[in-house]
Image (cartoon, rainbow, N blue to C red; front, top):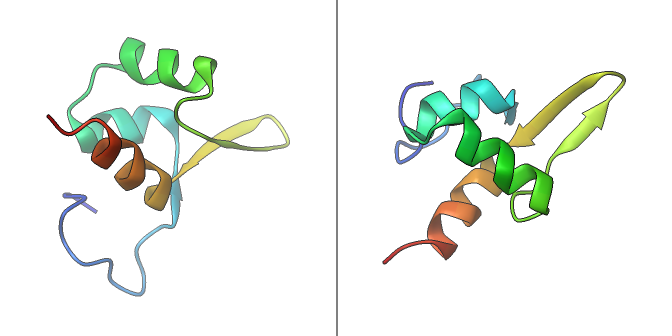
Length: 66
């Protein structure tokens, strides 16, 4: 997966790590983790792993459009 604006192929992940979310969006890790900490960007915790749904990333970006 290289671009969040491309249609999601059937084999694309539906959730990614926060680091991958930062890489995909071009947003700094610190900014992304701050959004997670504030609850502005929802995430899922499974065991010790935190994941961010790709749909949530798209919604978060849409809310912050200028």
